[in-house]
Length: 443
Image (cartoon, rainbow, N blue to C red):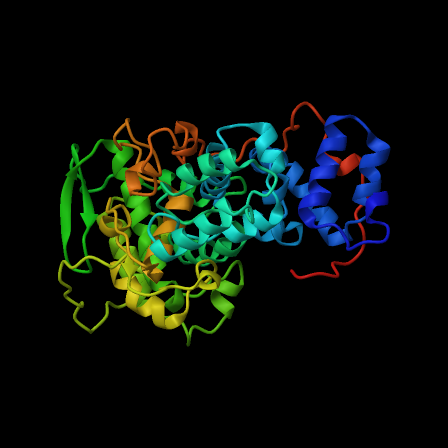
């Protein structure tokens, strides 16, 4: 820690990296010195992280990418745990790590050379879809401003791979901002089911799928508010598509459906601001897709909307636009209300999974919403085995630059049984640090 004695306080990512590296090296005294830089709130969050094996492994993967790890936010980790969408969160983290690993061809020495300024310049850019951004990035890269510790030949190779990437460049900064979206969507969906102590939203929804009134060889897919189509599907695919469609409903209407009250609050809180007609619509959709629960039955007691559903055409959302389009700072986190109102009419999986390639000067707000969805949920498991998460959704062009299969199935492990396991054979930090008193930070 001597290098920070007279300098700016190290980032959360740097503290995390030092604690983990010293833990692996079994240098407990040096590890403890870095723990002392954490407030009681941050220390509790980090210890809770280390009790969750899969989360810890996902963040540990960034140890070989120190510049990307600077986007770590230890102070908000407790919010990630509370969402109960472990599979989606781990999928996003693996996606992000795989992007940077593939960009640098799995070269650990190259990953260690990436500087923070390069990560900040690349994150949230669309190097294939936006010609304006591609031109700017190419000039900075080949001019040595980005990837400044690499040779000219190395930068040229990185640029060839980067310009084939058709999505938004991911980072941990983007991840923590987009978790705010996932939290809002998940709170909407939790009205449909009661989560057990170790359940995630995905695993709980799997349990309440009964296949009621469903065909044995097909699944219903909602194209718009009034129309469904039938697609070939086995039981696993029906559950997956059903879950995704309920998540898409939450994406469309989360602003109208508040967080579900818990415990005694369920009866005590006034419901003046609660749009019960939306809850009824969500319950009806869940039943129509084969899900049954006491919570869904309760929601179906609410009256249906007296307004007729809006009949929409089959037009497709624009992904790109003339001019700069959606500015970078607006490409993560909660969307602006005006953009949301325009985009939500396209938030159906028929559009979210649409495999279209488009190029222009800039990208649209819908482009970024679809990108956020795909980073959390990936694509259906029945996709072409020759493709992967990014190629199948138009985010990559080069077959040499693609995600591994392990990063493509966000719901492979629907349980939370590994929460209290040791990580890499080491004990968790509960024996290393005593809990402090008080939070002292954002909750």
